[in-house]
Length: 110
Image (cartoon, rainbow, N blue to C red; front, side, top):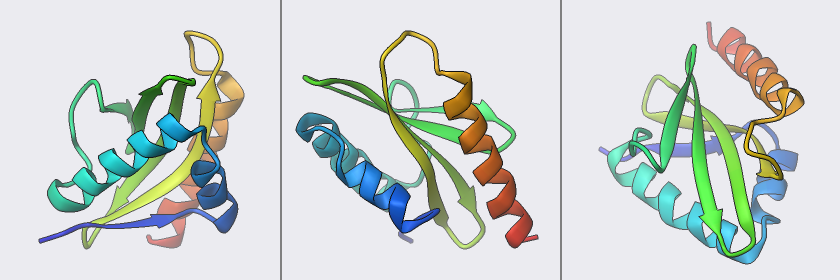
């Protein structure tokens, strides 16, 4: 049974689609795999950030990007937030945005 991918908002979808070419191509490849086999692709492709938050790890010629997502019942994957990494660590503001959106999505479906 296949999975479904949706987005927290149209703005999130637009941000992801506006990623540099090699990062966007990597996103397409990995999300196609997620649609077929599920959200847990394992490292180095995906990583659990705890409490139901996961990151899709994109690497390309233009750099590194992360897309935070969560999963819901009925095989639904929700893309919450994306950003291009400029340092080795995830900036606190980016993580806080993803956590806030995760709480909102989980609350709506509770």
